[in-house]
Length: 463
Image 1 (cartoon, helix red, strand yellow):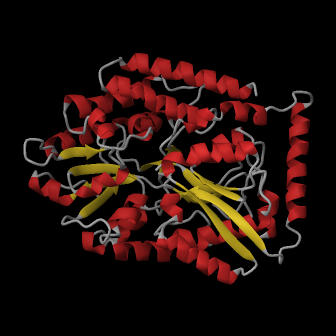
Image 2 (cartoon, helix red, strand yellow):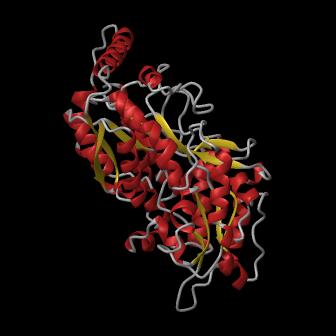
Image 3 (cartoon, helix red, strand yellow):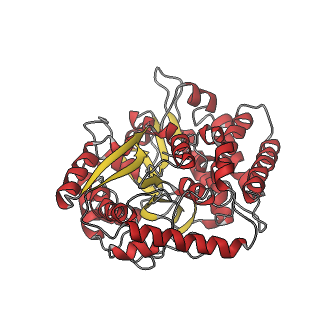
């Protein structure tokens, strides 16, 4: 969630020495010992949950952008009424501090029953040995990890470590007023623009001469806005066959160069130095000074449907996410799964998964999000969201097509999630500023990123 909101912090580096100590395992009969350890963890978890009627308190670690909302607080009230023997103790952490806080708590052995994360967050936790496998415990709460979440695959060594919340569905949002003022036709509701067409349209929409600047394209300072075009071209291949970084592949170079053209040549997007100095965040798009933005479904859920919090005098439109010219006409998506996970030090894993099941069935829907849990009525979700977006003249057909209802959508990885995912993302974001501010060439930036990420991957493999 906000898969989509994942700003990688440097805080994870603060605890590297702690993580090294906690992550090391014996290399003697390593595979067998790892398997035995996982079986032992599941056995311990099950024995700890035998007394399900006992009064328990669950510690839930999540970002404050979720926990501090009226929707979540109302959900907790409903949950505690339904399960009077389970009380919820939410640990709310601002998004930019979340990974650092999580790493410190996990590495120190502090007891936490459930943690939130996007794909990068949770695979980082899996790689660091923070989580327990959950497939056997899930069966106790009538959840089949192999069937109840569609085509969701095991995470590692045949085990499931994540309880999926939602898969992000990306699309193109556009400001109809900016298009009207520039006399530019709206994007097609079903046929995606190519990235080259987006660059041309963004340039036509841009007007920085007046009192208020209008940029044709809005972006977030998140990895996929720079390398996502390349992910489409490589089918999400962020790693080479030997498990090292693939970020210096020509497709990713082309992706970065495209953004440089839009930002620094066409001047159709805010310069990155201005973006950072202004503390621009993902909700800034809704101030009305941008023509287009590529965003996941949370743009509609957190902004377009809450006009009391984000008032505007213009209508929003939605269209398929742009694609490379080689894939013209194909409906593509950057796929990332937000999930809940049970740490190894959880005291109440069964109750944690009871909470997770209710979270995806109740709270997720209450925020306007379609959960991956396939026992939820998707038709009602589409209709409710279409009703919320009717003032923007967005139809039920558009909502179904773009918010998860098109079976022909081609999903590619949104972010690198396998080897050293946190270090991969944070290193990349640190380095690309040098390219977009003219301090280094694109080749220098990508080669430096690869070198640093490969070192992190190798160090984690050795632990």
